Image (cartoon, rainbow, N blue to C red; front, top):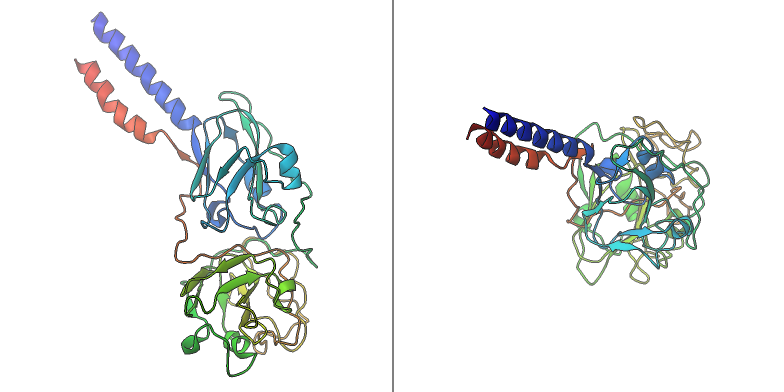
Length: 361
């Protein structure tokens, strides 16, 4: 009888320890569905972390496109200055899992030029197991040697996903992605009247080694400036998933191709009201940030959706207030669940049968 009571006590203690461990250790997917990208606003990751409680033993999961981003753990000073030169830890393959082993403040940035300055940075405060939750860092002005382009108005915030199934658009249709022979406005005309929504896919068909697809800022789009690309794909066909609302600008970075009309500007929204940037006049700056469930179309000074046309080669298109996240090229990383999940469920499931057998012996 005494042996059975001792066994029952040990089983109870083991189960309690496993349950406590499963509740304490969690996975957090950084940015949830957005992933680890150049965000649509400078405080996106600060806002994401604000209502979370990070405890020693938890894991941060960074999902990003290999070759377009990385994860660098840095000091507070290097975090504030966006200096990734002396990283404490550098992870280049997605998904990047970082276990928060120690209480205190932890700082992460993307080491790619300009990405941290554009808001791709995360600071978290980690509490010791069983202690009171530590408050998360508040948003602070972003500094760095490579700051993001200055927006002319507040950037559009995250927008809810499309209300229809994602659509795949082949850029230029049968012509593909090439130097157009029908005029410099060929791709602007192609985009006119199309409703691009979050989750849709652009397919650029071209001969590898002859063309490429580079995403650029508004400032770089009109002069065909290829000195600071947001992303660059060199293997055709290139598939780019539209992950954020707002204006997106693409060019061919092969010398002379963009100037000859191999360039595309589109508007992306979560609703059915977005139209390509207007060609009749320079497009206005984006409207103030919409709520997370509503996409804001271009301001009232732009042409109505029924008459809006893509930007012409002579009109200066508007800048997106912040760089858009890099698209994927047939290798978008898989995204785990958005909420924190227990790390120890599997261990609990495997251990219980063994303990029950021990109890019955």
